Image (cartoon, rainbow, N blue to C red):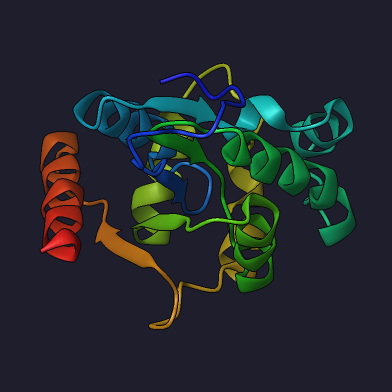
Length: 180
């Protein structure tokens, strides 16, 4: 279950890699951690992989640019590429080009779990959370940048306006359906 590099596996079981995506405040950390527990995997909060300069910018309400996100996306892709079992990383992955870049860096299949919700629902969540660098003032810029996954992407989209256990159950059901 570690995300360290491994020797070739003799049992031919392939690692499963997931990005739990969506705008800030959609529940990536909660859903990712709960899914990791259900899938016997490891969850990494992508916020922990941001360079300090990105955190500093967002902390004062400055939206990140594509150039700002570049080293962060590199870290996300590199971390997922090291997975030797089930791995989940929370990452906004707002644009198709970001998701394509992550997949390219991993060099293996990556499934995206898009947590979708209304601006009102997410704003309430952002305003209620404490000790996070992302201010609610940046929510509009995240929605403006968001390109929901297309039909040709390996993605599951779920509405977040339901209890956590129902979201997790819906993801598990969708994954089981994909495997059958």
